[in-house]
Amino acid sequence: MTEAKRLAGEKAIDYIEDGMIVGVGTGSTVAYFIDALGRIKERIKGAVSSSEQSTARLKALGIEVLDLNATGPLALYVDGADECDPHKRLIKGGGAALTREKIIAEASAKFVCIVDPAKRVDVLGKFPLPVEVVPMARSLVAREILGMTRAQPVWRENVVTDNGNWILDIHGLAITDPVALETAINQIPGVVSVGLFARRPADVVIVGGEPPIVL
Ligand code: 5RP
Image (cartoon, rainbow, N blue to C red; front, top):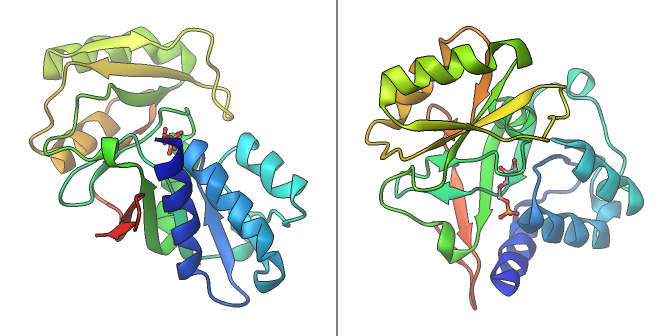
C-alpha cells in the first residue's frame, strides 16, 4: 500500500495553482503529498496545517506554515482518509487529527482526498469511528453513543490530541445514514468533533495506483 499512497499523494500536486495557500492534512499518505509539495515549494505561498506532525514535516522542507485565522478561506485542502464510500463521504481521525482536519475541510473550496485502494468501502464503519472528546466527558459520551448505536466505544488510551483532548473509537458500526449519525454525535455535550466527513464530504478522491484513479 505504500506505493499506492505515494502515487495518490503525488497526483494531488495536479491541483496546485501558482500562489496558493494549501490546506494540508495528516497521515502517511499526506506525508508523500508534503514531500512532493516541497519539490515545488516556490510555486505556493504557504500551507495551513492540520497537525503538529504535518507542521514539522512542512517546516523541515522550508514551507511556511500559516494561521487559518490570518489566511481566511482556502482554495484547496488535501488530506487522506481511513475509509471512503461511493459518495466521497469519509471516516477520518485514525491519526487523531480529525478536529483540525474538519476545520480546514470546512474552510476550503475544494477538498481532494488521497487514498490507497484498501480505503474504499460500500458502507462506512468497519474502521472504528474516532470521536474527539473533552477528557471529563469521556464516559458520558461513551454511554450516550452506546445507547444511540449499540456499537462499542473504546478509549484510545495514551493518546492526547494536539488540542489536549482524548479519542473514543466506536467499533461495530454500519453507517447507513452518515449525515444523520454525524449530526447526532455532534449534539452530545463534550464531543469536540466526530471523524465522519459526510456533511462536508470530499470533492475529489484520488485512489493511488498505476495510473491513479480520480473519482
Ligand atoms: C488522520 C487521518 C488520516 O488522514 C487517516 O488516518 C489516513 O491515514 P494514512 O494516510 O496514514 O492511511 O484522518 O487523523
